Length: 114
Length: 111
Image (cartoon, rainbow over all chains, first blue to last red; front, side):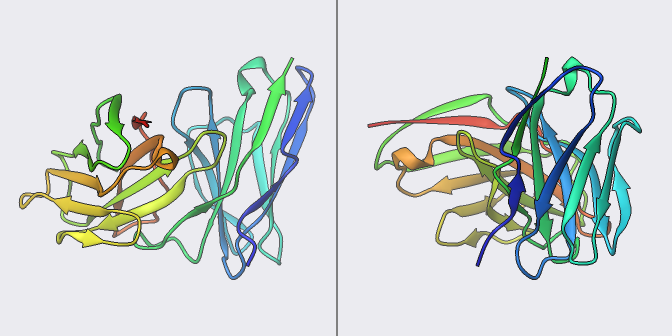
């Protein structure tokens, strides 16, 4: 049973460009969340998707957007990249979003903005 | 979500027990206590969670204070593979439950 898979694993972008990161949730999971983790910090919640709709959003600008597809996979898009967007982007999935549900994380996509 | 306080770092010797403390003095009655850990160059992974009673699983034990204002994650025999950042997180059982991470405790295990 594959866990949460993310692609690409590493990428380098230039300031001002746009990037799309992809995530396939663990089999059977319908809820996908995205987190940003800067070096030396804990992950920060970006947003959560369920039934193809954004249900919750953290304190991130509109440059960060996402999408969930009917097969529950998800994309994170970041427009007008800034140097400060350099981070590890983590996708997490769960079955529903109850506080007792285990959340599974992928290994992340390392984004470097130069 | 309520805030948690953890030591920045701890050290342990291999094969010895490790007690990782977490303070959550403003915990509400519906908050579950979750622990996740993040090994180097990996995403966080679930360790254990509890509400009021102590909990055991194959990875660890969770001891919850009677007033629920603190908890301790117990690794019974630390291995080198347990070196990681450990996060104590409160999740409100009455609302949609995204995770709010602090800086966690960086555990070093010496051979």
